[in-house]
Length: 285
Image (cartoon, rainbow, N blue to C red; front, side, top):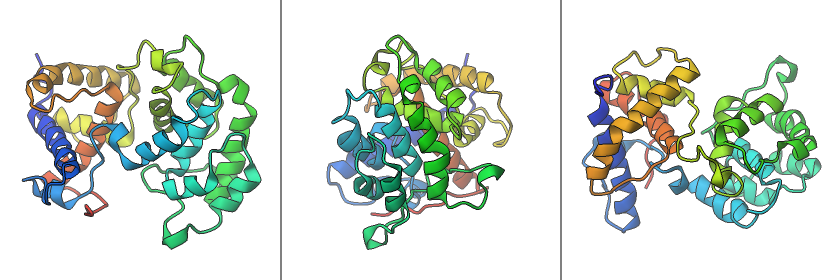
């Protein structure tokens, strides 16, 4: 039934090995935590998005303490476009929004030489803002207009993740599918989106997860996807993985957005394994 996924076992093994690294590291076991040289050499994000360092910081410092804030969506947007805890800590929870304060924080260096931004999510402006500093572009082109629309951008009580994802893209400048899905991935852990009917099944593709799904399916890595076709194939992949996951010791319980993240990381692993590329960042103890 699942012959369309010739690299299914390789993908599952990658997922399980990466999760075992997290488990062994957390338990205090000595390095190396894997028998896989690629995983021991290069940096890969955790299998569950909620286990990653930036997400844990955002969750503990902004999301949980402000779970009932009707404009939490705006804070999550800010968090993901900046994506650097040291900068977010200096900024403070950004509701109500103070553009002058944000510009001051984003244009002053962090202590100890920590970068203002993390490189996980690339932000690109169109020609209207070409040549502007990133801080000015984010504040003036994205955050100020988004804040002005705050009343219409709050999640609705009966809204699905997919419909809110579409609203973010339709209404906010510079909010592409991938970044909108990152905001959704944070907001789905608080009401009202915590009760969304598609909580476990919604996912939107990103450049890496499109490559990753190609790898699992034995296609050329850069073969293009229509989004609706990618989502259907992604759902079939999860269906194919379900029996194997239940049979494994770790018993991973992942939602569709976690699997999307796994595919993104698998694309990096697959390129290193096949010698056509390698991840940009080395693993650091």
